[in-house]
Image 1 (cartoon, protein in one colour):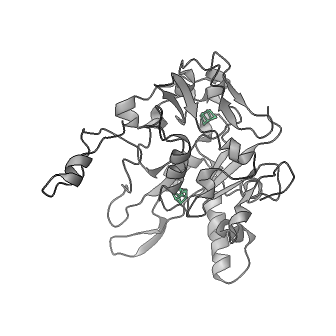
Image 2 (cartoon, helix red, strand yellow):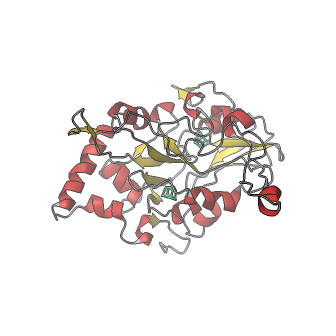
Image 3 (cartoon, protein in one colour):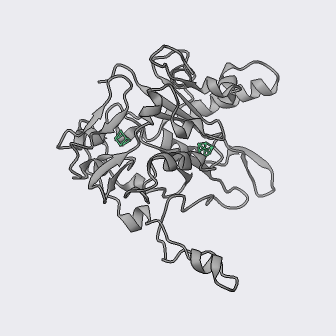
Length: 332
Ligand code: SF4
Ligand code: SF4
């Protein structure tokens, strides 16, 4: 049990799918050494099968107090092996050869970029950034027979002790979000470390700090001034992803609003493009009142009235999005 829990809130109305967070993470932590296929942070287009492919149908998590069986994703079919490209031919040989992958790829991160659902003119999609949720009841930790996975007391970050890990991969199967990866070169499992070396210096995670859309807020859940507490507990507009998996995730999402559908005469119906039941599948029954609160506060702002919720989500000052106490007590 941790005394404090660091949490992240991602506002899906501000995520533009630019993948800056993905690259910020990849270049810092997973660009070599058997980690080439790993994305500790990635952004998938919803609705879609995501990365690894069909992760929502792969099981894992909890059923009451018992672990639910889960599947291991396959390297080529579900993650996608990073492709080599015909650089030599495209750059140095005569002719006008386009840059192409040398092997046929079957899947990969961001494979379904911007692929929507629904019929014209009512198609829709949105972006869903995903990373380890540093869960309060982590299925990965419970599944490890070596007790190699632990949750830090001071901030709730879930880590794998690389000395203890033997690469059995029970954790990979147990995580319902499929956010632990097996490193075939090291023979060990690896995952998002919530940038703990940065956090310990009072610097936010690379994915959050570099976010172009200013979509990510980071603070401790017991910090009542912090955005996480405000958005999750006070305004109740930030919700966990697939709470029914039972791991009690600590990454929360402000659900996406969407424009109205059009009827056969091209008139707006007042119904949102993204179906309510799909959002409920992802974010649970609280999504309806979260969206209503968001719309109500947007309307206030549009009328020129004040809205502390909108001010928080707009994030006028970049530094206000992050509240991480440094050892000297200073909040950056
Ligand atoms: Fe473990 Fe998965 Fe939860 Fe991360 S998201 S703590 S890997 S169960
Ligand atoms: Fe979305 Fe921010 Fe990541 Fe860009 S950097 S994809 S806006 S979460």
